Structures are given as C-alpha cells and as structure tokens.
Image (cartoon, rainbow, N blue to C red; front, side, top):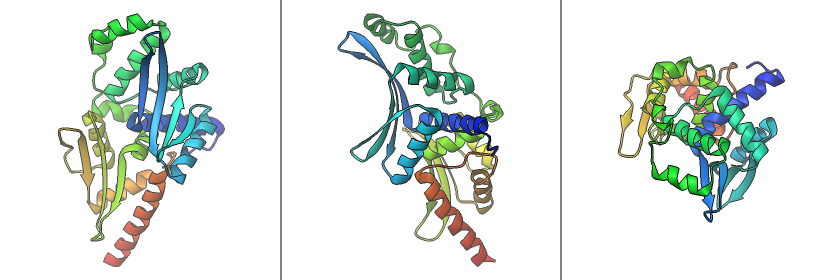
Length: 253
C-alpha cells in the first residue's frame, strides 16, 4: 500500500466504512420528545487487538470516542464536529449496503434540515415513503466491484463479518455473512472466484468456501501490499489461519 500520509488516511477512511457497515449503526433518536440525538455507533467484542484497532482509527481519522462496556468496545460519535467528519467520509467514498445507505439518507436528511422532534415522528410514521427513500436501491455486484474503495472497504467489512476457520479435523474455511447483503456477498464471491452459491436463511445471506485454490486467492488478497490489511482480532485469526494453511500445503506435497 502507498505509505504517504494522504494514502494511509484514505485507506483508513475506506476501512472504517466497511467496519461501520458490518458492525455499526447510524442513529437518529428523539430525547423525551423534545429534541433529536444523532449518533454513529460501532460495537465490537472486547479484545486487546480490537481495542488497538479502534484506537488507531481514532488516531488516524480524529473521530469516535471509545468505551468498554460489558465485554464490548463501543465506538461512539455524537459530537457535531465528529459527525460532520464522518458524513464527509461517507459522502466522499459512499456506503455500499442498501439498508445502511437508507439509514444514512434518513440521518442526513434530519441533520441537514434540522428536523424537530414532532417532524421526526411524522416522518417515521410515513415509514419508507418519505422523499428520496424509495430511490435508494441495491447496487449490482458488478457495480460494487467498480468502486475504487471496494478492496479496503471489504477488509473493514471482513473485520466485522468474516471468519477464517480451522476446524478440529484440520480443514480450513472462509465464511462471511450479512443480513440483506446478497449483492455485496455476490461481489465478494466474484472477488475471490468462489464457486459456491450465496446461501440464505431467514436471517441473513451467507457465503463459505473450503476450496484450497480459492483460500489461496483469499490469502493473496488480505496479504496484498496494495490494501490496508486486517487490523483487529481478525488479523490475529487470519495470521493463524494462513500459517496453518501453508503448513498443510507443505505436508500434502
């Protein structure tokens, strides 16, 4: 990855958006029916690696406050300056999941128009029919692959939703899932040339592979010098996974 300060900051912005879409929420809440509260929150399992990652994001981008509560790291931004910084990042690069794009559109509409509490209740009663909402539709998987921030976004998203697994019988697998994310998972399938279909349950879409050649494609992607790389707990999981996979390949020769 280009190591200039500008390029590093850009990569962190893109990674942050993937993490936000995987494990975050963009919230507009009313406080005692008097005023609206705007918050952007990311919630992760507490580990030292995840905390170090969150602290590094805060250092690089100057956003989000960190809290540790009941075994979780809570990244929260509710200050006007921080919210405007995050909105600028989103507007520069763009969110990719449809439901997150809709969340943000509602958030931005309320924020920019200084919506009152009573107006907020009215808009919520309209459900999904308020101005502009229905025009936000899924990006196709091919279009997702054309976005310049797709690689670093995917790494941040993997930090939230991916899994590098070593099973008890020594087999290896990679999986990733998301509620309402069929096109995104299809784009991931195309990125790694995964032959398996994107499966669905009543709760989410799911993609998994055990194929050795595909797992090598996946390792090549996450270890590429052209991307930011995993930063938190998934980095530790990935390094263990990669070492085990390489050891298995040597034994199989």
